[in-house]
Image (cartoon, rainbow, N blue to C red; front, side):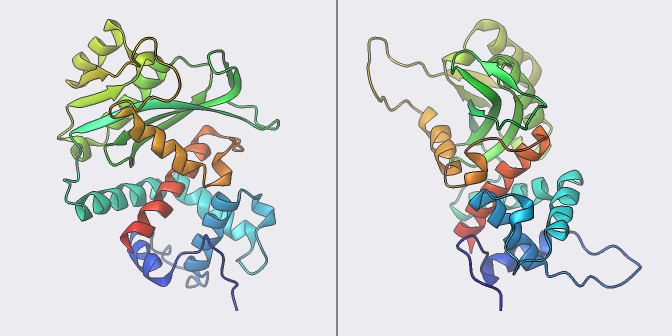
Length: 263
């Protein structure tokens, strides 16, 4: 009997994801791996923050689990699942699939010692690690994410993640407004976004001479999303050798959050 973990998917949640998983490759032996157990093992890693080799023994072999995770990262399966669940989540609360407004921000997180690729120093946050350039809709659901070295300026990272957002095509057909903080303000960045995508950039600045916490219009939405990630120990630091894997871990956290809402 498989032990129940708090990160496990229920049968109803798995039934929601199962049609979105790639079919077995034609030819050869029929697939014998239990995909429900594979997904539970992957979500266990994201939630508990353990190493792949330390997956509990009542899950499939860690090599099998990691192979599915890696293959689905390379072929875009995780992003496709995330996009479909995001559309369903928006429709479930009466919103169109394509948002009209999004919020752009970045989060700097430290990397562990063994991570060497795409690592830099963010002098404003005094942190050595990576930066998560993130675009969310007004529900806080991730539209696009880009992981870079922490030394990359916010405006340059903002350009790259907005370019990635524009590649979603019909999924952002209604988009016209991008909310940002003061780090993205400035005529060159605002004009670049307008010329390239025909989107309006609206900076929300902190009132002068204020101290302590201030609730800023729209900006609190993306900060709440960053807070959701704190429930996933694999995201508290960046443990991933590749930035692409770090991005996938974020999509996985959001997949689990959305599927729990939908089922």
